[in-house]
Amino acid sequence: MTSSENVNFFDQCSSPVGIGSELYNLVLGFYYSEAQLLDNLRFKEWGDTLAEDLKYSVPLRQTRLVKEQESSVIHSMRHMYDDYRSIMGRVMRLSGESAWAEDPASRVRRFVSNVQVYATTKPDELCVVSYLLITRNRFDDDHFDLIPCERRDLLRVSGDSFKLANREVILDQVLLGTPNLAIFL
Image (cartoon, rainbow, N blue to C red; front, top):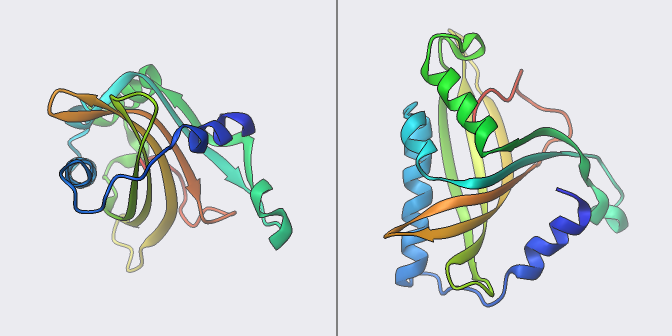
């Protein structure tokens, strides 16, 4: 996602959806279900919540002066840049017997908060900004990794739920506090 695409994300977000409204609660339910699916290693079911035109990006961060904060996210360099096909390849690998980076699997908890939902010019799409805090423990370690981030999502209405059409994850850390990103954010 380029810098102009990032601006377009916020440009397409219009009026906020009321907190506690039926639509807001449906979006919140979608995020809670997504976290539960991923935390419980139900990757194939999570894959069913993805739109086939999905773009999934995790750009790099740089430390900048306060007046340069807007340029702290480097969209031309990424930890991850996937589409539906590559994500589903990862889902198949993690669901099979060749996911050595995650066998044994990390013990992960995803805490979703600060969810803000916005209408868009398209009646079947919503902009959603949320905060995510991931705790991750591996092997027999007595410590866990923290991965704090902001997610900027485009959700598309699909039946009585949603499909994830675009996700940009803005990590809070410049240097990752975890050995790899073999998990979904």
